[in-house]
Image 1 (cartoon, rainbow over the protein chains, first blue to last red):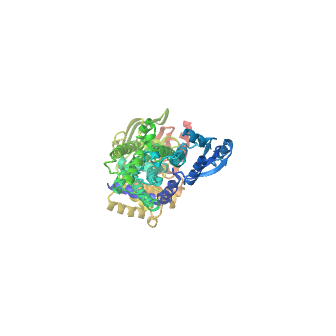
Image 2 (image 1 turned 90 degrees about the vertical axis):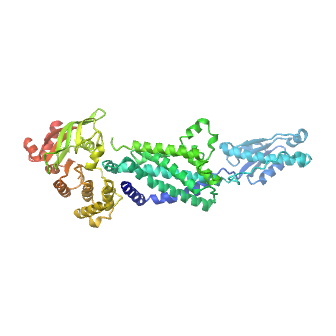
Image 3 (image 1 turned 135 degrees about the vertical axis):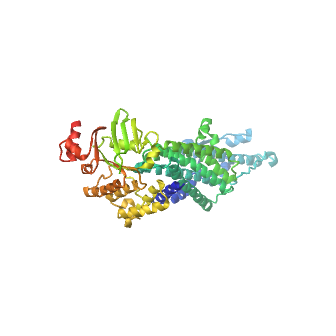
Length: 371
Length: 245
């Protein structure tokens, strides 16, 4: 135990003597939270649309009016023909085009149905899908209004089943509530994986590892000495990030912090272990950075931070079982937003424990004092 | 000092990297308390051999005992009984003089009280008392080397391995370093030192000369000079290195 104490003392001194460390610990969370949370938004405002109205009727004008009255849609242009309107799409000045054919209204009155065309810029499929969703909602509403006052139906006849959804855990569908815990998970991962990995490989670069290897120090003492400081820094940064989340975004924190920090500690053991494992293979800090980045991007994109993991193909979902971030991403959201307990998170907890044991054992095993 | 006890026994040590023999059938013994010089040009295989003796690397073949422990199975026992100082600098540049002593003393398991005494004694001996709170990167190379050596023997090992300990310093600074070596040898610590400075070779009790992975001569400096009819070790070395080429 005394040996671990000496190692920890040395590590902490070196960490805090490193000029880059304090900025990394304090500035990184602030930047990530303030920048990424705003940038990673799915909310659509300001969808610009161009209109080609060959009908120029009360119904067509009414719909355009209704759209531009909504907070989501802005009218970009009225054009005489489709080619002219398409220019707006090409120049990115409009996101979609509405085309009303001639006789749009007449047909509606005579046949009780009519058709129009909507062209959506779908370079980003998600954005296109969301735009279309908003549009459909407004169209449906408009449809009902037409039935009532244009075709002189009784309102009661027009009423269908009313759906009044109530959204739990994020009642206002505020994307920040969803994204902030995600960004916190990324933060913990970056701190854990890079700092631990870079630290060990630095000793290799400087040659001090040789001096350590020639001492009777136990492998696991050495690895513990490399893990614990970054575990503490990782947890500290999580607390700091949560503080910013409350202060700036007023994110609901329903669950228990004890639960969250237990999950975070277990998770940190996994990423720290991964970082150390990478550094036992690598010879330079550059190599650690490259491998680290590669893993990070895969971990983040597959973790479900942006897209629900359930909608990934089955093979990707299976692969995701190897992604430690996948477990923590769902855990942190469930704890903060739903107040889930460790019992609810059994699957994540046990998976991460097993994962952590495997990672750290591999790191200890791979770290050879003799070659 | 007991010159009759073998502290290092090497029989047929070979180390192969692929098809290349870095060490080719080395045979020698080192006596307890001896200053044993391990000479050779750059790339002759000195570092490979020293790493094997320290338990940092496994030999391909051979029977090797260090402090009576087997290098295949008892590397951890060996490590308790040896000190090591390598050409690549092994002190932490971002820790102070005192913190380096404390760290290495600590991981060798010295008791807190002993460590404190040792630290003071060592700082006094090296005249570094007023530099104890200075970072290693702020002190001159010669002092770093003397400090590294003192730290390498802080746990009072039976043998200390020095791998080109005095690289990059002038002969006067080297001489100061050797004063420390003699002092350690007086206390009974066996010194195993690699070098390619021939003035250092003169300071050794016995010297082995390695060329291309093989030991081609092993004797006292005077013996070698007599055998090769040379004035000094430099001439001996040049003759031997040349004949091999």
